[in-house]
Image (cartoon, rainbow over all chains, first blue to last red; front, side, top):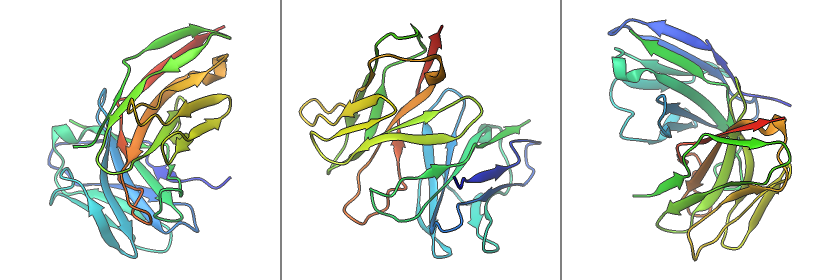
Length: 115
Length: 116
């Protein structure tokens, strides 16, 4: 079964550094998402992306975050200048359609540790 | 705002025991409700869903019924197995037909451990 793949599985970075988290969504999916889960807390929506633009974003997704689909397969999340509180598990997801009957397929996540 | 509340874990059961994980929600509009499962080292997988009141979602022996009157979507399984050990997340989305399902609102997750 096709799956969403994320790399790396674990990323350690120093505060203030830029990081790029990478995702390869399922090939025929059109809608892409990033979520994050700070340890011990809820999984939180960050952003959704369709047709090469952001379709929805949460309050968490401030100016230090950006997303891009640089080619036909990758979907990336960039954090420009990491802070300690950005340490979390970041999940990428994709779906074929937008409607409530089109399930999200999640990747295994990238654990980001900011020191 | 919209929110999901799940029972606190961890939950530890013996094999073949009955499982209930409680989930209640607060939402405007007409939410769709979901249970996602995360097995160790893996991503979130959709376990089951219900899109309107009184619907029952079911999969792999798990069931949950959308109860509008009690704003609940409790997850149940009659006989758990060791392989069911995972973290279970209740979630909702409040979207109109054709709207984005992407903005899922999750509960904190409940860790289930099943002992042989």
